[in-house]
Image (cartoon, rainbow, N blue to C red; front, side):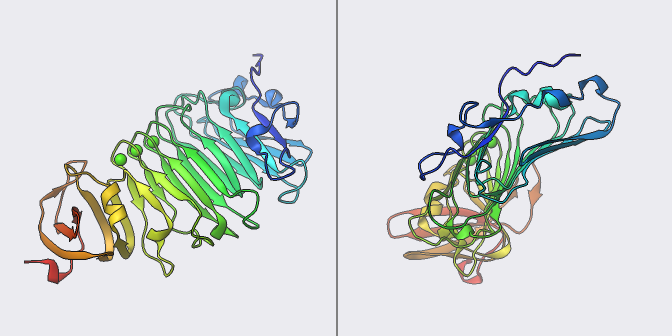
Amino acid sequence: MSIEITTTSLITGSTNTDGSGSAENLTVENGHEIDLSHYTTFDDQGNSEGAWTIVDGDTTVADRFNRYGDHETSITNTADWNDDGEKEIFVDTADYEHYVQSTLNTNLSLTIENYVDVNLHTTYLENTGELQFRIEGAKRGTIDLSDGRSGGVQLDIVAQSNGPSWGNMFEVTGSSGSDRVAIGGKEGTEYTEFSMDLAAGDDWFTASVLNAPASASQIRFVDGGDGVDTISIHDTEAGTLAEVDFVNFEIISANEHELTLNEDVLSHNGTQDAPLIVENTTELNFAGDVESITAKEYDYVNDHGVHKDGYYEVTVDYDDASYTVITDSVDDSWLA
Ligand SMILES: [Ca+2]
Ligand SMILES: [Ca+2]
Ligand SMILES: [Ca+2]
């Protein structure tokens, strides 16, 4: 079977020489294109296991696949981080099905490692199995999952930074399905910024392991979009909630930690018809000019129709507004 590559799928380079460019500028003219067309395994579809590796300069593309068609692919800069010519990478999955066996039940995993600036765009991924992307060691990036497929995507960003200059922003657009997105990091994550739109679907998000921001002007924003979205977040010594602005989430899970909600969170998450649900807190607090807090038992049936005991409807009155939260953690003084 002959495989024709119809669009460019993988370009590395360094177009940003003065702080103004980015991986989004990479083209076949100004970057280095890596041709993956010789490594297709389509001939063996469905009944083989194996691996292939391309070494092209300082870029290594490695793929392992099993007889079920599951693929683990990695694209790695083997030179130093921030090395000239290997600073940026552009990956479009338009060709993915040309170089991996993407059958209907295939699980696909792609790791992009040790690039400063990553531009990832997903298209034409119609596998119904798991789809996982891992961006490891990037300082910034643009990740667009919106054209990939209607099913959900798992995205893990492991950020790394050497300082505040030249941008630390990750822009992420989720798929229309139920995504799982985590951003954490290695070194320098006090500079990391993000702006994410998880779009439709019942999405899940966490940023709990980032360092507290180095400056108050940094942007850390996530929009859950339509659907019943969950954010996993909790207080830290630096005050995690102050670090992340989030809107259109319906559930907060505090992962067995203390959690403090402020009016900004209460006014932008949950709705009057479906109040914000707060779970897995060891202690729930409300910040700001709270006038009164009252709680009563609540018959909570979750999204899957499961009845859950021990929940309360908590009403928090501020001087200018009142909010309702459904939670399994109440202070005795709130109970009438
Ligand atoms: Ca989504
Ligand atoms: Ca959503
Ligand atoms: Ca939502």
